Length: 258
Image (cartoon, rainbow, N blue to C red; front, side):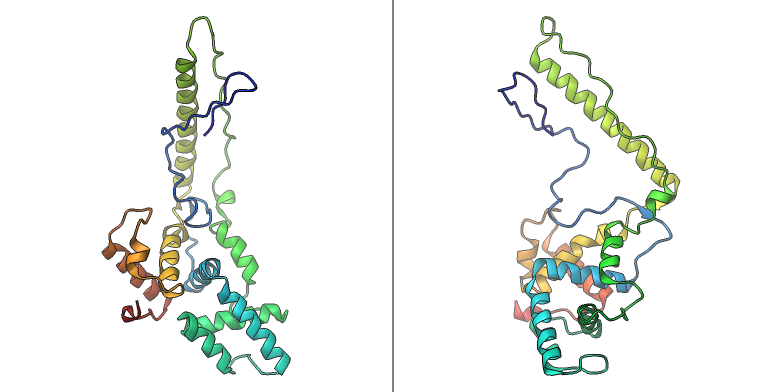
């Protein structure tokens, strides 16, 4: 947070360490709410879609190559709808270590979107699911009362004859963070009272990124573990990658290829 006080031509920036939550992980995964309804778990299918979205974010060529393949298949009149399995699709899977049946289902679903055909993987379009995913279920605004907006109470004026600028800054920061933390706590209590829970996707998102880096980007486990924001050990990262792959039903890339 920046607090700017003084002459119009002077900008004094102070970085406070008093905030309750760190922003260090903002670049790791897309922003999602902290809560979701307790009765709204995400299915394996939805998790697979989220993982593939992470894959495309980290390695755009996965989708670009798939689109080029689709154009070639349609130009040549080669059938790609299930149960057809063109060799180019198998080659695409081999190239990115996305060899399981649902990876090819995801690819065909992309083909169906580009062909403007109804979705078959489930009843929801990929774009619709993507929006809902980032809302962490989309139902928490209705399940948890919105409550009052966060409003900072007026900060007592700086009396320049009785108080130094340093003391005023300290007082202003203290009031801001006290009121902010109090507001956040009130909203968390309201969410828990409504039986909302931390969303599984928020907990898993970083695991999807680790798995995608290892599986598709070809990084070693050591590379993924190095300087991870959570400060976890090699063993913890290794176990998380394998556990996440098992949850998705993804055949893990052999470590002998690292």
